[in-house]
Length: 119
Image 1 (cartoon, rainbow, N blue to C red):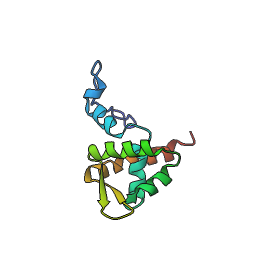
Image 2 (image 1 turned 90 degrees about the vertical axis):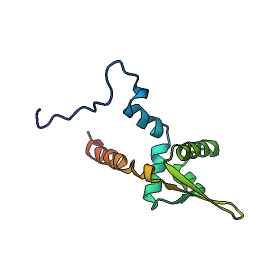
Image 3 (image 1 turned 120 degrees about the vertical axis):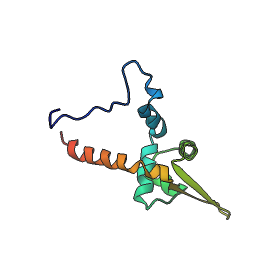
């Protein structure tokens, strides 16, 4: 192997349905316009944000889209939703241990962007 040759992923094989691979499974958890961005903002805000803070950080996202995305992420075990019994309702979101395990992927994406954004 050459020193500058990048190893191949190796988890997908020709003719295999990508959705049935480890790569496909990972994509199924983080696909969508906002999931990685939500993970990014939660990590940037010391892992706890209220719904309104997330909505502000995500910009022009509808209530329906944010709510459904957060429900999917909670169902997939990526975030934890904590509701406080008070009026008005207070809900906080944080990354689960499983969600935190995706942070190295985000770091790698940031590093790649830093290297290649001016190509």
